[in-house]
Length: 165
Image: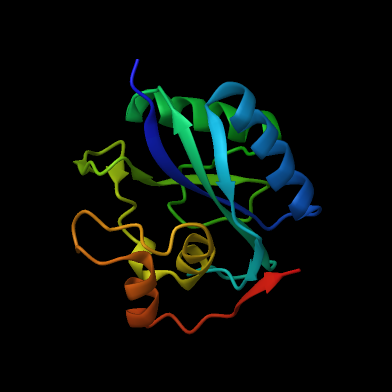
């Protein structure tokens, strides 16, 4: 089986945020694939949310042999184990124990009602670009043909994002 290069973003804004990120990292390494690189923790304001707590985010570079859809199912399982219960009725962003997004999967482009890769909003979100820039500044976006570093330089998002030491 072929190993695929995947970049994920973890996020949490409930209670012990680092604990949720770390617990999901352990589950990702056990259930999904080999962890190659991990960014620092980044603290950020919530994007497009009302009544929220500060988020912690972290970017991961992993190798997996799962297909994109199977990877998504595995991610949902990890989120569920960590404690996330999605309320899909509202359509609004909500506070969460853990959120894991697929940012890139190899250099493929997928548009479906279940999954879009690369993540359709990553270039607009400083809280995604900052941790990604730490682990893969020269990663090329297959649609825009720009690196993460170039997208960060062009990003208009002014929300607070800070690396946590």
